[in-house]
Image (cartoon, rainbow, N blue to C red; front, side):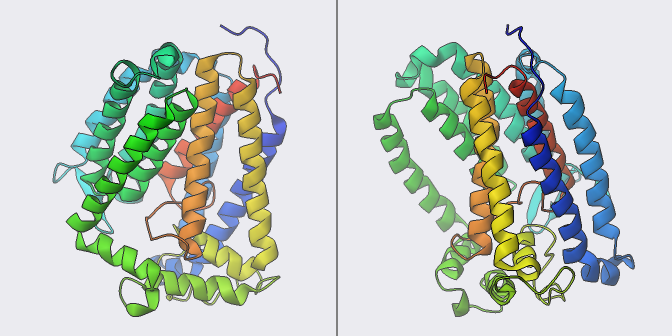
Length: 366
């Protein structure tokens, strides 16, 4: 076990605090009209986001001081627990349905999303598996197959909800981890072909997914249906111009863009803060990913390297997909923007994950 301990990466910590501050501010700005209309309280979503941010930040600070290899001992228990929750959420009366997906367990605004917990549990378990079996990853049956079987079993349970966005992020993150562990390119090419076939099957199995693809290609073909969100998002991004309309001055949040405080919060940010504000947020995320990559490369052992790589890959994939959707470059998938979008489970788990990353930084040769 590593013994030399440094101070945590304070630059990374400052970046997280900056993103959290922007996130809480934008959640209020994006949701005030909708919150006032639905709950009679313009601060309804902002107060909850601030609460989740405080809880998540406290958890991050606590976890930052827990040796990262400790999580390896509990990875199997955590993974089994997440599988159990993924099964429970599918049972009528236990799982809660929101926006067509049965993905939550709990009551009211304080429910949890088991698939979010599964992302982190899978990263920790897979980091341990890959560090123990790296020399076997060039072989399909001995190394690659067990990892893929586990990942795609979890993906299948998440798709039963259905939640293509979270399933895609989890699977993409795990594939990145497997790739950097030394798996053969040939195996990834075969998986790519199988993945294309599986993606086509998933799209054809549900009509709403076909509509999402066609609306992405031509949202104006169904402007009041499947293309509505993308069109309204573009109407927010476009008028923002260089400097934006100003904080609180968004027009699209007036019931045009549905629930703008969630997946499409970047559209409101671009409308109010303009190209300059959007570029600043992208710069913060770029710096965040750079620090994460440095920590992964400098980690003192394979487990720490794979764990850090998994956390930063998960973040990068979410950012790329979310902003791609908001700007019309990708189909709508329902993925939150890390640290900015409203959502308790997503924000708390992301901060907990970065608590682990900050602890790795204390042993990393930066």
